[in-house]
Structures are given as structure tokens and as C-alpha cells.
Length: 287
Image 1 (cartoon, rainbow, N blue to C red):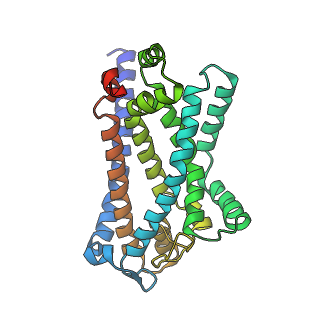
Image 2: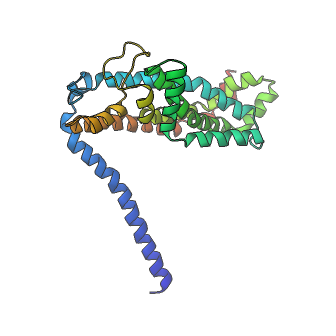
Image 3: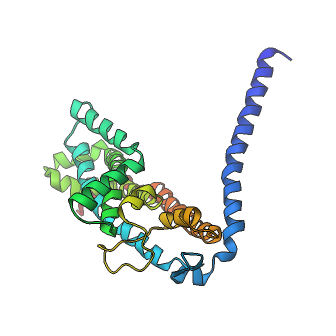
């Protein structure tokens, strides 16, 4: 057996071992959470309020608070992010210095640790704007964090619109607004929806941002100006601050993982769904 074949087999073994290890690690984590929290996961757990610091009862108020935080977050992300993505894709050429700097800034902001966004949200939204520890403060801070991701993904979706559609729109003497409304947005709708769902999943899993802005209160919020506890913050609190909270923490983690899996599945379905870009131009224009 020559040396090259020995090296090739060794490399193959190393790659297989690495792949199996990466598959076993999340599998072991899931098995540990299922074995710890499955017995605690029932109808009452999903639809009742926490009792005894979360050791008993359920997570219904936490689910409501999480939903309100996500609504506040994505309600701010969608108009701002879509507007920025349209500007980058329609007004700024790919090769210009402005476009390069803007995309570079968005990529840098996407990699900023969430704790930094949490501190920013605490100073700006909670203190300067006097929103305090509230669902609105947490949602707006999350919006700042996921906005760069949504802009970049939406821009890519808008740039995937076939150039022949733009040429046809120019030949029909359509205004840029009409082109965006009747052609660009319908064609890129699946990609934009996928970007929206991916950003929602990113926001759903965050903890540090909400500890600094939304607070810890584990009761039903009366409005978005009340403090509220998200699922991720609830898991952190049970695991770190509540003796005997490992079972409800694991059960809450299973709920959160199920939501994240559903969100990622939906994003993949949208990304690989019916190819809108193949629709005839007459159908897009309604003619």
C-alpha cells in the first residue's frame, strides 16, 4: 500500500469521526433534555401560569410575552428592512463604494455579540427614551439586532429577479415604483418571506438582549409597556437561579426547540417552493 493511499484513508477516517461527533453531540443534548423534561411537558404546562418560581405550573404567560416581543420586533424590522433592501437593490449599484461600505457595515453588525445590543437597548430604549424594562423595549432592541440579517437576505432575494423583467418593464415604460410593486416584490416574495422567518427564528432564540431590556416578570402582560419574560430568559432563570428548576427548564427548552424547528422548516419550504420568478410577465403585470 503506497503512502498516498494511507494518507487518503486516514483523512477519510478523521472526517467520518468528526462528522459522527458533530451528529452525536446535538443528539446527546436532545436526549438529555427529553429525558429530563418530557414528563413535565403536558397540557397544563403549556396553558397555565408558573407557580413557585417556575418549579410548578406552566409557561402560558411566558409564551404570550414571547409572542408580543416578536410582534414588536418584526413590526419594526419589516418596513425598515424592506425599505433598505429595496434601496440597496434598486438604487445602489453592486460595484459602488457606497454599496460596498453599506454591505460591509451590515455584515459587521450581524456579527456583533447580542450582549452589546442588550447594553445599547438598555441605555437607549430603556433609559434615554424612558421605555423602561418593557416588551416594547425588548422588541425594538431585538429589531436592531436582526435588522442587518433581514436586509442582507432580502437584498439577495430582490437581486435574484431576472434582468429580463427589468428590461421588459423599461420597454413598457413602467415607473420604478410600478416595477417594484408589480414585478420585483411579487417575484422576490418567497425569498423575502424566508428572510422574515429566519430573522424571527434568530430573535426567538435570544436571551442576553431581553435580560437587559424586557425584564424577568413571569405574569401576563397588560400591554407592550409592561415587563415580560421570554422563553429563553425563562430557561436561563430556571437553570441558573431556581433550585430544582431543571425539569421545567428542560420542558421549556423542548418547546423553544420545537418552535425553532418549525420556523426553520417553514423557511426552507418557502425558499424551495414554487418558482415565482418563472411566472409570465403578463401575469405579474395583471395584463
